[in-house]
Structure formats: C-alpha cells, structure tokens
Length: 574
Image 1: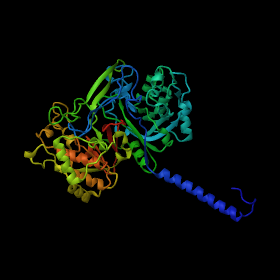
Image 2: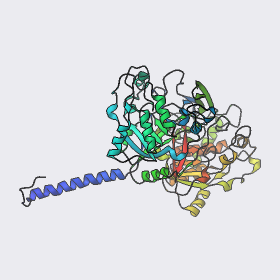
Image 3: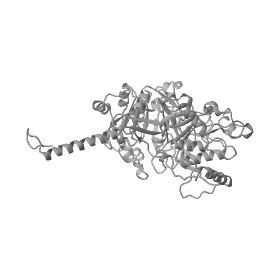
Image 4: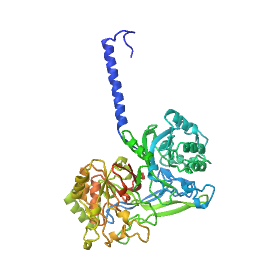
C-alpha cells in the first residue's frame, strides 16, 4: 500500500487502510490454515455403470453387468445383486503377474514376482504419500492412436520443484484425461475405443525408461488418470514389464487428482482379494489435510499394515449357501475368456454375489426406497410388526454403495472381542446365534473405554479364522450353522445397533460371515436397525486378532452405481 509520502508517518485514513489490509490478509491466511488442517477424503475412483466406458472395449473382454437378482418383496426382504465384473473394470490395479512370467516356466520374463498375484501383495504397498506429477501439458498432444510419453525429465522436474522421490511414495501421473473423457456413451467411446481405433490422440503415459528411473528411487506404487499405464500403440507391454519386474503395483483409471496437493496426501487403493488375479477392480482415494495423512504415510513407509480380507476363491465358501434349497446367493465363479500364451495364463472375469467375501452392506440392502409400498411375505410382515412395536418405524433408503461416504468406512479401529459368547446357546434351539447385547457393549466400555464417534467397531468372533477352509471341509462357515448342525456365530442384535448409533458410530464390522446371525427373524431386525439408523456394515473379515491398539481401519467397496452391497478390501495401518 502506498503511504502519504516517503519517510512520512501515514495519515489517519492511510493507517486505517493498513490495519484493514492486515486484518484481511490475516483472515485469508487463517482461512487457508484452517482449510489445510481439515481432514477430508477425496474419491479418485471412476463410477462403474453400464452406460460408461468402464470395461476394455476390444473383443473378447466382457462388459460389466449389475443384475438386481431380487428386490425387497414377498420372495426376499433384501435387495440381492449379482455382479459380472472383470478386473479391468473402471479404476483398476495391476500387479506383477500381469507381465512377469511364473518362475517354473523358465522363460525370458520369468521370475519370483510372477507369483505376486492380487492375493499375495502385502497390505503396506496399497498406500503411501501421493506425489502428483503434473503432465497436463501433454494431454491430446500426439497423433491419433499414439500416447504422449512421460519421460524421466518430467519426473526430475517434479523432484527439482518439490523433493526427491523415495520408498513409500505413490507417484501419480496427472493429465486429467479421465476427468475429461470418462463420459456416458456415445461420448464415452473417446475414453479408450477411439484411441484403440486411431480416431483420437492417446492418453499420456510413462515410457519404459521412466519406470526404470522410478525403480532407482525405490518407488513401489504408482497411479495414472489415463485409461491404462500402457502407452499406445505398442509400448504398453514394455512399460508394464519395466515397472512390474521390480515389484511395482499401480492404479489405472484414477480420476480427480486435481484435488490433491503435489505432496503430503495419503493415497490408497483397495481391491477385492481375488486368488491368482493379475489385476483387479479397485477403489482408490486420498486423505488430505490435518495430521491423519502423516500418520498413515508413516505406517506404510514402515510396512506397518495388516490385511483383514480372506482370499476369494472358487474353492472357498465365500458366499451364503442358504439354509434351504433355492435360497443360495450367486456362488463365486471365475470365468476364463482370453488365453495369454506369453504368460500361460487366462484373463478372467468373475460372476458373484455383491456380498461375496469382505463386502459392504448399505442401508438400502434391507430398506426399500422412500414411498415404495412393499408386499412382504406374511411371515416377514409379522416380524415387521414386532420390530416396529419395539424399535419404532422401519425406515427407507436409496443409499447404495456409491452414495456411502468414504469417511464412514474408514476410522480408528475398535475391536470388541465377543469370543466368550461362543458356546453359550442352547443346542435344542439351533439354528441360533449368541446375541451381542447392550450389556455386553457397556461391559466392554467399562473395561476398555467408551466408544467415540466415527470409530469403526469390529466384532471379533473368531468364526472365519476357525472355519474358513476349502472344500470338502467348508461346511463350518455357513452350512452347518444355518442348518442347526452347529452353533451360529455371535452377532449384534438391533438393540446393540441402536446403542452404537447413540455413541456416534456409523460403521460396524465383523469377522463372521454376516452381522445378522443364523436366525432369519433376528438377522432381519438387525439389518433394519442398521439401515434405519443410516449405518453401514462390513462383513466377512478375518485376522482381526492381529489388529494392534491404535490402528486405523481402511475399507472401501468398488464404486458401482445402484449396488445395494459391494465387495472390497479391508486393511489396518498402525
């Protein structure tokens, strides 16, 4: 601000302007500091829906399908969905066997990392500090069908401006490609198909030299907001192999990277844990602001992580078989569709129920949309009358997986050990599950401290750890408890759910097959209570006994529009 004269004291008016200017500047600085200190979640995942270019468009890659197999009505009190989903759908994760050949084949590209499938990658590698390399100037700057190449010089320019990359960083190449071109059809053809058909410029991607450069820095995790990490038309495999041979994993098809600072955010990708998968559909997000990102980045740099999701395999009982004939959910099926002679592997898709393995339960799983007249079966109508007489009106909800905020399913882990309830039911009354009551929760609080808002409450039953075995020894997880041949797993009742909601809890998890237990009447009431409180559930965890104190729980389902439940991966960082 100009004063009244050189070397003179300011006039009263000028002095007032100086004070106002300082106040305004200070307010702006304070506002920025407050914004920087607030922790927020940034979803970096593409929406998966049939009218979007979510799947690789060339033959014979299968198209994504969401099948609403059953809706809430006389045949089912739940909305039951089936997914046909390929690991190259939407935002996705690649792991070494995508290009590294299994060691026993003794080929040029063979190595131990040819066995590092999605179910073998350690949990610490899924996250780290986001280092966003801005390559927007390259967008659309190439001939049709050709990708502009991101070279080591661009990465070195990032390092010169910020700092040298190191182990524990997640290098993200930001071109804003998916933000611009991931659109519903017919515009969506521009995302991949037009590039493959040489009708439009390719997406920016790193060349093989860049992967080798990043390997010298110790970088193990990357991401791109392009449709693939493979430059078109002929460098996809060289770039993939150059990175994957060092044990790297990465995100393809990220989005919304503009919402991340150049450094300092925590970035994470969580994929369903498919056995022998060389890639997987995934959910990626970042946590920005406050102290939480620093805490989580430190955990991943030091490899302090625990995987809580069992492996998905056709040999394992990972879906509900039902207690009666015709009541089973869609079994988990691996479908081979394209043979890769270089890898001696089949590309494959999966047909599965949306509640397969570790998964999210949304409010709409058991609640109809608002204004919907539901015709339940006579038995369920009686249960509803009983429920509403005791717990109040059953609610309604249209909240499906893509509408569940990420911050609801991530938070400080609070493991509640309910294994003492195992063996407490009357055998003559099976099928039944021991019920976790309000008294149990209050006793746990008295011994271990009160629940606080936004914690993730995890019930440790030990059921999956004990009984999850391959066929033919697979009946202990579901079939025997459901048919009354053994005791059901401990499960919270509706009173416990309402108590947890009163404590500010938004998400409840379990290492049992589900949160309902084996008594269908009591189970439905638990799900009604969850939905009516606008709470979500995470089911089918394992390894909960290895969660240390002061751990942070991370889970996210694949971002599928209109799905009432959804598969995902759960980990904790400590």
